[in-house]
Length: 432
Ligand code: ADP
Ligand code: ZN
Image 1 (cartoon, rainbow, N blue to C red):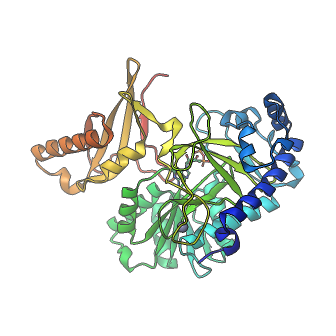
Image 2 (cartoon, rainbow, N blue to C red):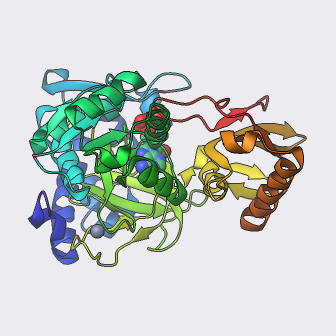
Image 3 (cartoon, rainbow, N blue to C red):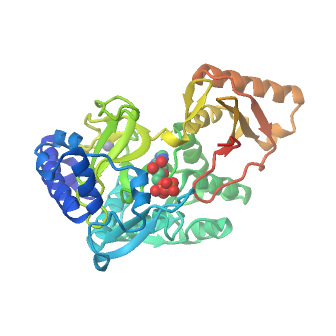
């Protein structure tokens, strides 16, 4: 099933023609309407006329998060505010948030792409979609909402949090699809089980989970606990919000919606584009956005692109699930480690819960971490010897998979804070 068969399945040659046409127009508009863009082109000695092929995109300057901050709030908009019908912003844990603006067409595009994503997860207009992403400035709630409505599904705009109510509505309304962060979905599963809810008897069939990194192991947990199929959705405020890429039923990577976003992967150190198949930082150029176009935006998310045909029939390039952001990467004794890699190992152990924290400290010039893992309640009452044995097994498994020796601390059930939105996996005690 496709939402937009023509655009999702066109040959890669046709797609490239379409992208080039859209790219030229978008670059030209951005250059003409955004003074900051014009200046950075001038610094590099390029003009929109330099873009005659898709490869020519490489000549253009990158856009980085700081450019967005420096032009806060509306400096990078390519349309006047009277054309902008919506503002959204990212959480902006440090400093000013990143602000995105949307014209009426941008909102329409976004809704269409989310509808496309929902169809990839098996959604139809018969579904009841519970939106458990936060509503408000965060793009998750509003994005999923408009998309589900566009699909013609029945939307339950419950937002994140209020777990009791969330579970009650899910049962009473017969929710069939759940959209929220994977960590919150897990919490819902856990709390539901505590209340005696049997998810195998519920109509819930699919989850559309994103906004934070998660692992294949986490997918297994979610699918089993909630009795659903779990799909990964990706996006970021700077580029639009969720719906930049989405998994299909094959679950072998996320199709990037290339009819609207041009994707590159670069080496984050040298900034050189990398060939397909090599891991690096995802860089995205919007092809059709009006209010807030981005040229070569460095997402800081690490992935690998795969252009091979997919069994679902879609031709859009697939990106491997995001392992982490360059800013979340820890360097432990010289080894680059993402929290999601640690998650993946931890979830192999049935005796622990999928709740963990990486407590990061600094010893001299090196990052040092301790991993806190929550015990399952059955395990908690076990003999000390058994727990020590478990600690040792986790330690050696992490050592053999990731090549680092990290102390493991088992903590009591229910002691690691649960999150309603993006999970916080790292407690940082470094004083920088
Ligand atoms: P913030 O930067 O405040 O977190 P956003 O909501 O815009 O605000 O977050 C976008 C980021 O969230 C992405 O750049 C990426 O790091 C992460 N993200 C979003 N979806 C996924 C996903 N499916 N898998 C992994 N990471 C994701
Ligand atoms: Zn596919």
